[in-house]
Amino acid sequence: MTIPAAAEVGMPLSQVDTPCLMLELDAFERNLRRLPDSLKGRDVRLRPHAKSHKSADIALRQIALGAAGVCVQKVSEAAALIEAGVKDILIANEVVGAPKLELLAGLNRRAHVAVCADDAGNVSALDAAARAAGLSLDVLVEVDVGANRCGVQPGGPAVALAAQISRASNLRFAGLQAYQGSAQHIRSVHARQEAITRAVDYVRMTTRMLTEAGMKCEYVTGAGTGSYMFEAASNVYHEIQAGSYIFMDADYAKNDWTESGIPQFEHSLFVWTTVMSTPRPARAVVDAGLKASSIDSGMPRVAQHTDVEYVKASDEHGVLNLTGTTRFKVGDKLLLIPGHCDPTVNLYDRYVCVRNGRVEALWPVTARGALL
Image (cartoon, rainbow, N blue to C red):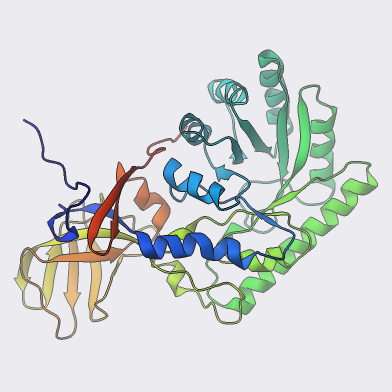
């Protein structure tokens, strides 16, 4: 039995089956241009993070607008995007294990793929993999600038690792990865800027010590949608890794953006869903639950209905509380704003791209499920 296509080019959105991942193209295209426009006149380049969208169609559009390339988190994401034509990628993460290292080395025959490291043993393994492949790898030292995730400590430990990379026969020390991820969703602009100021101080100290040790730090890369103008203004960062700006999600919408210098991006990514039950007057159930929208950063928000709250998600159901006068009937269709765009995208095979209420394109989620 053949299952009918949920969406086809030319179809009115009202006829698109649910749940589906819907991209509103006008808002998306404004976001796509707004961030690079905001960086004009600053000596920084954009390398957007493709872990947000996992899409070659989107990555190539970002590069066409001047991006230096893209970031990914996984070597398999890099492989999927290279296959689709992306030629400059930073794996803004550590790559560990022989199969992944072999793949990383092989990808460098087809594109420029740099990688991060925060461990001496991993540096040795990277060097061995590059030597076996007969090529050189660009390696950045990841510095923990406050996110408390991966990364060596700034200053002496980062310099020592950079020296090891510089001594390796098949590696090149390419700079510093300095991403303050935990600052991105600090709600207060002032507190967010303070966190980035501390990160900048760590980077400045480390680059000074690198210079004193006779090593050139060619570039510092990092920053995200919630903070990138602070890094851009620092005269320390050379590259901005913002990713979610193209979509925005319900969690980012909770940030205060006043006087941040960061432009107001628009919600462009939605989950299109259908009301499947109205068991009580003030309750409705939609067909988009845990398998349709990630809730790690909170529940989705119901677009265009401020008196409707998405309060509970199970595998295939989302429960809505209708706190005001809005009422739904079975079969009504709604737009949900995902709580967190990145893992929500990874639940789908494709974007249903809509303009003026009609499907204009279907873009594959190129690196969906690329977890290696």
